[in-house]
Length: 74
Image (cartoon, rainbow, N blue to C red; front, side, top):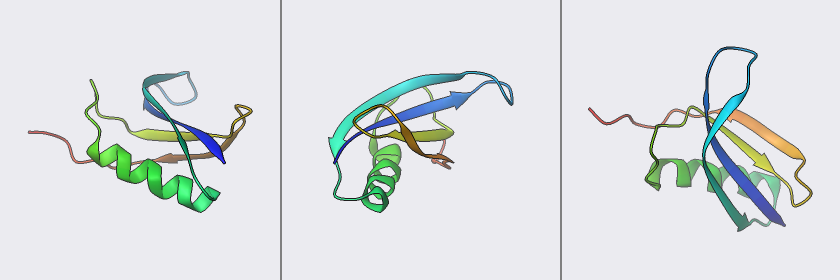
């Protein structure tokens, strides 16, 4: 399946998200998509550290949203 992974920063609880990176790729299942999203979160260079990941199917429907804990640079 074709998926879109969005890495986001949350602003205030219940408000809009700031998308800081977006990746389109293929995954064999929703579980594989979650694994891909977490691996990429730790390995991609982004302008800010994301604290949330969203995964969308090819129609743009969100099927996963979760907090991520990526190491922060010191």
